[in-house]
Length: 216
Length: 216
DNA sequence: CATTTAACGTTAAAATATTCACATTTTTCA
DNA sequence: TGAAAAATGTGAATATTTTAACGTTAAATG
Image (cartoon, rainbow over all chains, first blue to last red; front, side, top):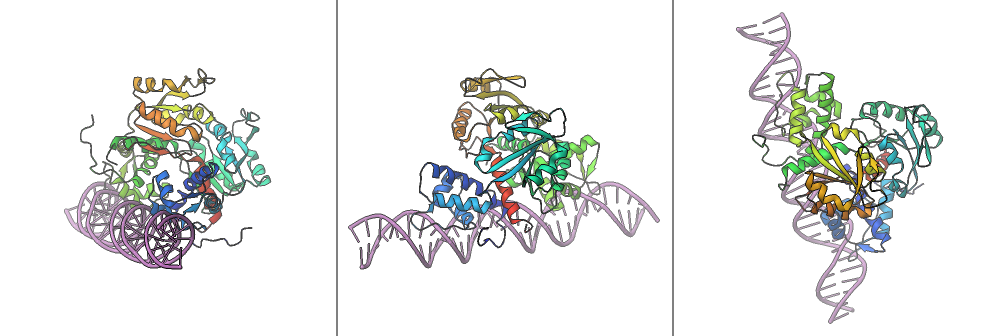
C-alpha cells in the first residue's frame, strides 16, 4: 500500500511512547489553525527538551524547515502514518463489566480511528445486553467475529485472574495485538505484542511520587 | 510514623514503574501460599532478567537470603511500604461519564487500599445520580470534600479539553497527586506529581508494534 | 543582495539503565 | 563436618537514552 516502508531498525520503545503525545498535540493545534511549530515549542508544551523532540522526530519520515519549524498538519499526518494509526482499525473488547462498557463507549477511540466492533463476556446473564450500539456476546463467538470482521486488536477488560485465559483465546482467534487493561501480566507469543494500561500500578507510582515529594 | 525513612536519593522512575509489578506478583503468590521466590523466578514471571530484578529490589529495604530467595510475604510488605501504598489512601474522581463511573466501581482500587470517596461532574444534570454507593456532586464542592476527608489523589476522567481546568481545581483544593486518565497533557507545580494513564496512546503504541511485527 | 537570525538535522558527550560476572552467604547432603 | 550448590548483593562493563553543541539552511531584514 504505502510506497517505501521506511525505518530499517524499529524505533526505540521509549520514542514510540512519546509519538502519540506529539500526534495529539499537532492534531489539536491543526484544529486550532496553527500552521507551524518548532521543536522548542513542542518541548515546552510536553515537558521535554527541544533536543529530545528533534531526536524523536528524526525517526519519523518528515522534515522540518529552518527558521519555521515543522508544518503542524504535515507532522500530524507523518506521525499518524509512522504509528500505523492512519486508518480504521477494528477492535474488540472482552469483558462487559464497568470498565469494558466504558471503553466501548469511549469517544476518543473512534476519533483516533479505532472502531470497536464487538464486546464479549463469559457471563451468559450479560449476553444480549446493549452497550452503545453493540450487544454483548458470549466469548465463544470471539473467533467468528475476529475472523469475519478482520479485527486487529483485542482489549482485555476482565478481572485479573481471567486475563491470561482471555489472552489465549484472543491469540488463537487471530488477533494481532492485545491491549491489557488488567493488572495481570499477560504472556503472548512474540508476534502478538501486548501493551499494558496499568491503572492501579499508576496510582501506586503516584503514591511513591507523593511520598518522596519535592525531591524529584 | 515509620522509623527510618530509608532511601536517600529517589528511586529511578524506571524502577518505580516496575515495583507495582513485583508487588502484585508477590501478593498473588502469597495468597496462593507460596513462601519463597528467587529473582530468577520473578524475572521469568514478568519477562525481566534476574539481574534487573535484583538491581530493582536493591532499592527496597528488604533482603533476600542465599539459596532461598525472597520471602514472598516479606517482599510484598516491603514493596508496599516503599511505594507508600501500605495504608488507605483517599481518592476522588472528577468526571461522571462512563470512564469516571467505571473507575469508581473498579474493585481493584479498594483491594489495593485506594478508597474512592467522591465523584464529581460539572454537569448539574448528573448531580445526585448514584454511582456505587456514592452520589455525583458538583465540582464546586470539590474543595470541601478534599479538605474534609483528607483526600490525597484526584483522578481526572473528563473530556480532554477540560482536563487542565480540572487539574487546576484539584490543585487549589489541596490534592497531593493527580492521576490523569485523559489524553491531554496536564501541567502542575512540581510538588503535585501527575501520572498519566494513556489509553488511546497505548493503542497507538500497539499499532506501531503490530506494524513492525516480528522485528522486535 | 549581503547579513543576520532562527531553527533544523546530526554528531558527540553525558547520564541512565541493563546486563554480566563473581565473591559471598546460606543451605543441603554425603 | 566439609564440600557442593543455589542464590544473593554488588562492582564493572555494556547498551541505551538524553542532552549539548554545532555546522547548515531557509527566511527575514536593511
